Image (cartoon, rainbow over all chains, first blue to last red; front, side, top):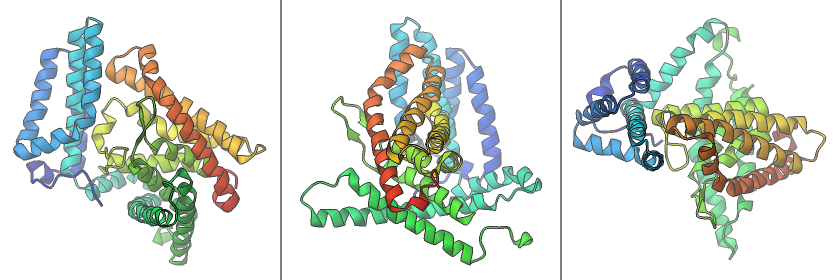
Length: 204
Length: 181
């Protein structure tokens, strides 16, 4: 499964996922406290510096992940210049880039499995209260598996349509795709039940 | 239990797959993606609680770094971005859509799901979305609301499709439409 984790080695990959997440929370709060152009520029420069440590290629990869943000940056700048508050606009635009880039940095350098482990660890208090958190882990695995299966089935149905009809594939294809998916899900549920289900081993 | 979890996981996957459907552009030049329809379907088919859980599961996977949002976006960055309001609105929208569908049991499926998808999947979704944009981009409420207007026709089409799909599914597999079961 494709993830956003970068394959370019960086010193951040070795840091613990939980620590990175905690640092991200603190840094993001700090970014929202800073309210001057100079402070924001320094913040953004620091983030850019973090991206440059692993090298130029890593930096460029980070820039690519920021693509969706530029539209909003332009929107904010234009809006504030029109309103005659260019400086305020600049602070918001810089903060937006820095906050998103910082969060992306954690995503780029932390493996999916490690983040899942942090989530399961965060749920420990619920487990102590007697709640069964195993279904969540189950559900995560199921979704990751369902996505390629669904895509594959949808492709097959679309190809079958194209082979038999001169018309373009229309929205009607959604019903058979959903039907197959739901039937599959029912089968998976049955198979899970047949193999002992999702209850934790200690109360069976 | 197993059935509920698998259906919730399936719909989380469905939202992701719908995000991969290539966006098509309306006559007005605004691109629309099918992802919002996935949110509506979670509500109209799974009902309030399970629909919201499916959306939360989907968002959790996005936060964990899977590029599942429309356009291949994902990771923690999207939760620091200007569209975070819509992400917060997704599970609320699915819940309200499901709640209305469940409450309108006396009405045939298509009109019930249509009304639910419009109220839950559009109106309820836009409120946190607009608030999020005003907060993140320092816009006025009016400005942010106005910027949403071009998306309404596309969202109405999606609500129509979601309702039609729910109605046909109810004919084919009534037991799987949990909001009516």
